[in-house]
Image (cartoon, rainbow, N blue to C red; front, side, top):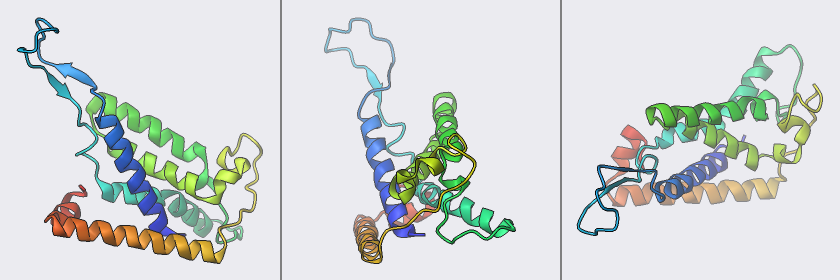
Length: 189
């Protein structure tokens, strides 16, 4: 399990996605008598995602596939390889979280489950499982989970160092801006 790269990539992807979604107006609020008249102001709801993401949940979601597989290995009588990808690394587990998250955003304007599901999906993109459609699409292409190989040791070390650098830079920036305690308390960046 390469926790730091998974967390870093998930947080960066969710942060970027929230900015992209927040940059397009979802809806206008308030009456508009004459849309061409600049003297009439309208309120545009743009920021559902940008300020409401709990990045502690994103970090948890980024590790969810590995946690599910680890629990399955511990509960199973069968001996699985430590890097064997199981149900946690399938779309069967992760895609429904995204769909349910979208539904919660639309119904209750609650983006927490969507953030967890999106982070779990980034895990699948980063792991070697992306090169293994039999695992990713399980059980559609057969009931067996194929053996997967991780990254080579030098590349793994490089990703760990890059992720640690990004995490430290973010923490220092939050501290410098006086927002580190807010991140710890509420998970906001």
